[in-house]
Length: 281
Image 1 (cartoon, rainbow, N blue to C red):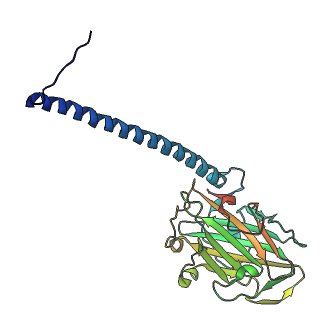
Image 2: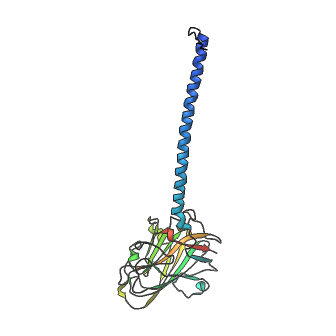
Image 3: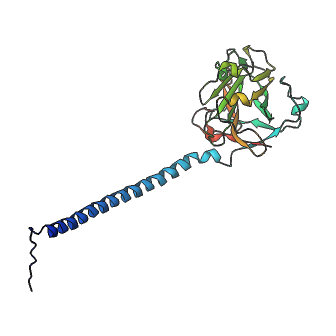
């Protein structure tokens, strides 16, 4: 059966009703389309976000790798004088670690470097004992190229939430320091607040080829470091990321050695993903 419904346009009320119905359908149809598009975009963004998070997690993983060495840092009992004396009473009960790992190149002679470290509420204390040969040291300007000389270095991250940001303190055997925080050099007056004692003269030139033992001792004020970086103050249970290094480049026995091993195609100490851990007691 065929039937036809005729709508008289002249009936204003009926015309307005039909117009409202079609407007309602058109409006909600567009809303549904927009909602579908937005939902698709959100799902795509979620997938990308998950993928990015997984990638970031993989890149950050070495920073917390439990296979790297751990040094338990003792709290200082009493006071300590900065005089470069490895055998003084204040260091007797402090355990040492050794710098033994080469980066790529193996030198003809391996310096033997031992390190001790302790802390109190206001400072870090660190002392190096180096059994060396082919010793040469010529940089005397603060912040100069001390890494070319017979030198020791201390890399350390003071903020557990940002282990990729770190200080590097480099001092040659003549006592000339260089300090940086993520390649930014602190004010020279602040660097001079680091107390340094050394057993070798300020300049060693020409090179000493024979067996030479030397020490270097430092006191690093935490308040000075806090001017340039976030500091999680050393205390029982606190841990930092760090590395100890021994270097020489301008002598006849160039070498790049570390406490925490670094796997790199060329010598480079600036690799926080390979830092070991300082565990404060």
